[in-house]
Length: 319
Image (tube, rainbow, N blue to C red; front, side, top):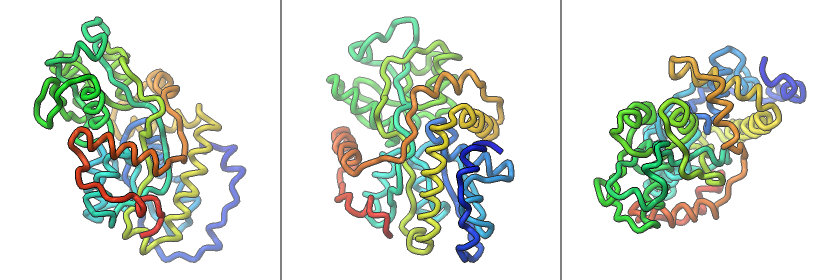
């Protein structure tokens, strides 16, 4: 089993916890920035789930891959999933949309791993070259979409939802590569492994990296925290263990992420691609309310989150 040294350090306490049978539904994206979710899903697929071994024999975990955060948050609202690895902006959108009633941030997961990719031929050398160019992002209102709009506005461009000086075109990650290769979009703001795929497979180069930006957090629905508070705490603890193990054993973590991404994408993910992308990421459980308040201000500057509410409940860990 992977992460063998980590497993040897675990004291299994699940037998002491009496649980009725429960199915836990967790959302994640097939991105390297969601490594903990990818590894969790892959170990479940292999029959020796990281989280299951820490949550006990009465817990079944179902994993649901999403393309981007807004759709994952809609699943939270619909009651289709209980927890999700997601970008901070969709989590904020969902929290504010529910007037603080629904989404709770339980932990950080990853920072970095997002970048603006342009053609390597030099036609886009700086922000000054973007007027009239088409910039693709994973989904309207997702973390990279907001970051792209904020960056363009800071450089003097008029940015609207449907046009402006630089059209920002929400495009699923899986479609960005072909459109970039065909010249149908001029630049892409996205996350790993798509950043590296654009570099290695489509002649792209990174113009700007978000090295320290919060990329992924672990969130839960308030309803789940209300009905399963102990299980939620134990999932967060297992997430923290896994995050530490990813940092302690990066080679094994990369192998599991590669297997997990290959399974979801139904194509073999290159080991070289994972190696290329990994240094851009920092896996951490740390996240603060102050970071999210800064994201609120940025999102409001480009027309999102206009009805923001205080973030007190978002980091309370309570329903």
